Length: 327
Image (tube, rainbow, N blue to C red; front, side, top):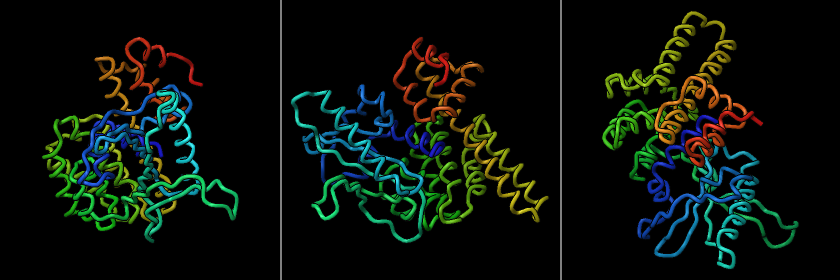
């Protein structure tokens, strides 16, 4: 899923309480113990989307998978992750019972007809009792803006452009709520980046991205344009708009050009997010060469694995990892 996945994982790491609260009943007491990080993540690095919790004092694990759509391979992936995760938890505490694990697939687009609330991966022989795994399906794109707002966090507001009833008026209120709810200007910029990335998915054909950019610009008085990568995305979008006006008759070529332009802009957004994460770990912005290596790594092995390395490695170890040949 690329750009959307890296953006969502980055924000989820910053706001684990808001992520968890949406999937645990309000009456329950929750304690966040941290992201699960073990030697098994060398095999499957995406396990950093598993959170260790206590719910009413009892150990629990929540595994969240962001999915562009509920494709046929999603149940297989969830089942595989659970196998790695179960093995990791056993290795960490030999002899102790493995905590109950809940898996959730957060789905960003797909069919118009309502998705099931539960998915499954069956491994038993036909005709035998069920064995395998069940997982929850949270089709955020099939929710309303009000339902997302009711989750009580700016984290879930970034999905508002995906909502089936998203309108310019509703998104204007969402932008205002993010402005009020973000702790810092940097966090607001990250939330607005995610908002724009979600708007490019546009599962219902609302076509609100351009209006959304203008709303954020009006609210933040140029914050997006002062953020280099996002500013480039805005300029690129404006250029594409002018080109569309000049080539109205070339619909097929225009569509391909838009897709290429959006991919370039979203790739730059990923590079900016990874660059900010590098700066937090090292204490300075990456040099031009380091930024180039980060982008090359993201293209070669996926932005998720690069984010993992930026989170796992420190100081000189991170610099050495960037300098190593890409596998």
